Image (cartoon, rainbow, N blue to C red; front, side):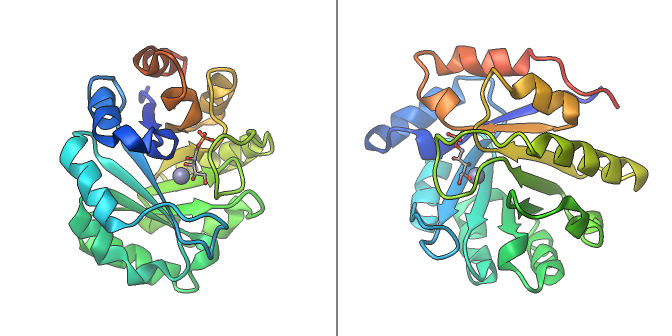
Length: 222
Ligand code: DX5
Ligand code: ZN
């Protein structure tokens, strides 16, 4: 059985104390730091750019899992690679030439991911799965932290797990948005590998304990 991973989403951190928040995450059992980049076009919100990611890389010792909610993300791949991204995920809805973009990410020695909005069927991943190291299934509409988990994501996880298994691939499934201790076990049992959690980790009184509680949940056996 593969153990699942936990990726706190820095969007929910206190940016007035960014270094302190990242040092706190370093002391937890979190596996990755999820980093949300929003351009005000693909999504209604704007977050931050590569210069801030470079600062995060300096303070955070966990791999940076960069999620680009950006139109034409190919314009910025090298910026985020240089800033220290370990993984870069782009949205299927933002990329007419997704295959090429994933190849470009891999050629930089970075794990390549595809992010999928709630309205997009996972069947659209059929011809891209083989060159995807990661799939981020959005369980909220992207743009903001602290939203409610969309339960229609659970059958999508099961369907994607089946697609990965029959192809004998090692593509990992991340779930992003509204993930908390109340729904994480169902998410894992549906076949997810990685839980991305912003509010439920950073806004808790004891983020390290929440991370441990996530890690101790039963997962999917395959
Ligand atoms: C949503 C972002 C998420 C967000 C998750 O657009 O992609 O990564 O930070 O935050 P929570 O866990 O608060 O829903
Ligand atoms: Zn995200």
